[in-house]
Every structure is written in structure tokens, then in C-alpha cells.
Image (cartoon, rainbow, N blue to C red; front, side, top):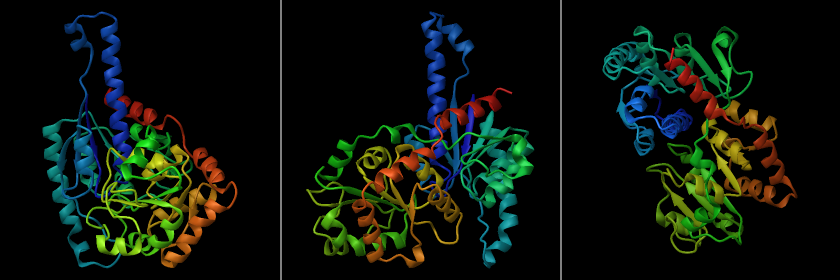
Length: 389
């Protein structure tokens, strides 16, 4: 069975697909193990099982490549144009670039010969799905967000199955081929160790720990607020800060704002910075008592599965605002507007959540209520169903 995943540019469409890939591997290994238990011959095992091959088409410079290759999945990149929802002369060339990208994707699919293609958004998936339709290859689209992205709208008419994260978010015209599964979550994120996470940063159990996530590509404004607030934050809290590649505050600036050293678990300070996190994410999340995050549905789903109290700072004017509003409406998060965000109200909001009796427990309970169990297994089974048709 050959499965092709496509998505990238940001980690939003990547993390749920990695969770599905992990589940498909687990199912495949279980099937082989069950045959072996039945004392079948090696020849019969080979005949009865369809070896699983996973491949990925992503972007050339996106953050997804490192995660995909660490997961043991063969990675290939494809240039795909992005339509800008504002006046930009580059939009004139998008149709031609998309046409060329679709032809290149067509040749890639001829070479890779996937049984099914899986996408969860991102513009790199558009030419891949269109090429798959030409070749009559089945496609599964997983939609995570409350507001559908343009990329997902462009591919939805050409897919055979749609799975989705949140109830009531699929337009009527596509509901017949859609099924509510919830959002897949990576298994290792759910099995993190608080002790390992604190040790990784040189932190102690004596102080509460907050974690700030700027998304896979980082968040410049959020990073600036954190640095400006460090002096006040580190009086009461330990801070884990995931900045994004190339967006870490300078050591001089950070040390001027905080009495603790900038670095990866250096000393016994109260501030620990990472540009990018992969396998350590589960441990760092386990160490956090409160998480400040963007509103990509991948990370929100992981936080909901863990029952983490969260403050959401969505990207202004984006689909993330609807995601954040959904969580706030269900009492699972506090939302802060980036346009009015200052170091003062940032610190005040964090302090209030810890000081108000039971507030963190309430957020924890409501966040867990938004997580649909077994989502990863449901999506993986849907993928298998398409591959076997």
C-alpha cells in the first residue's frame, strides 16, 4: 500500500498528517504481527500483507521537511504558487505557475504511483490533488479549521472523501462525502514526561511553568511581547519559549530582560528558548501549566487532548480568529487580540489565570471536552478504505 501525503509551508497541515502516518504504520505492524502469531510461513506473510510505503510532497523551504524525514517518510518538494488575498502583481502569474506545478505533480504521481493521496491543506497540495484527479487516484482531504482555507476549497470538488475536525464545519455541497472524525494528534505528544521537560530546561517544580508557541514558522510580534515581559514574568514563572527558526531574540536582549540565561536548558534559570522543537515537544508540553499559542488547529487539538489551559493569540485577519473564537465560546481558552497586546496586559492576563481560584481547572476541563477521542484511528481507517477500493 503506497500512501502519499502532501502539505507544508507551515506546520498547520503537517502535524495531523504525521499522526495519521504514525497510526498507519502501527496498524501495518500489527497486521504483520498477527499473521506471525498464527505461525504462518514467511512466504505466506509476504503474500498476505501489502507492505506500507509512505511518501510526502511538501515545500522546498517550509518547516515540515525535518519533521517528515525524522518520521522516516521519504520527502519530495514541489513549488506551488500562493494566491495573495490583497493586491499583488505576483497574483497575475499564479494561474500559469499553478498550471506548470500541476503538470510537474502529474509526472511525480506517475513515478510514485500512490494508491491514495492525503492532504490537510496548504497550497502545495492543490496541484498534487488536481494531478491525482487527472490520473483517477483517490484523494482524502482532512479539514481542520472552522473557516475553510482557499486551498481546501480548491481541492474539495476533486476528492473522494472528506474528514473534518469540528462538527458543523462542512458546506452542504460536500456533506455526502464527509465524515466527522475529530483532529488527529501525534501519539508522542500525548506521552510526554513533565520531569523530562523540566529537566530539559533546567527548571524546578517549585514554580509554575508557562510555554509560549509561535507556530511552526514563529511569530515575530508574540516573540517581542515575550521578551519585553520577561523581567516581570520570571519573577513568578518559568518560561519555555519556542520562537521559530531565525526568530529567536538575541542573547543580549533576552538577558537584559530576564535574570536567567537564554538557551536550551542552560543553568537553573527561569527562561529557556528553542528555535524549533521536534521529539521534545511532548515533554515540554507536559512541563507547562499554561500554554500561550497561535490558533492553528493542529496545536489547539494537541493542547485540548492534553487538557492544557491556554491563551490564544490568533494571527490577525486570518482563519485563526474563527478557531480561537470557537475555543473561547466553549470556555476552553482565553483569547487575546494581537493588535491590543502589550507586555503589561500579557503579564496581567497570565497572572490572573493563576491567581483566580479554579480558573486553570475550568479551562482544563473545557479543553478536554473539545477533543474527540480516536480521531487519528478514524482518519487512518478512512485512508485505508480508499486505498483498498
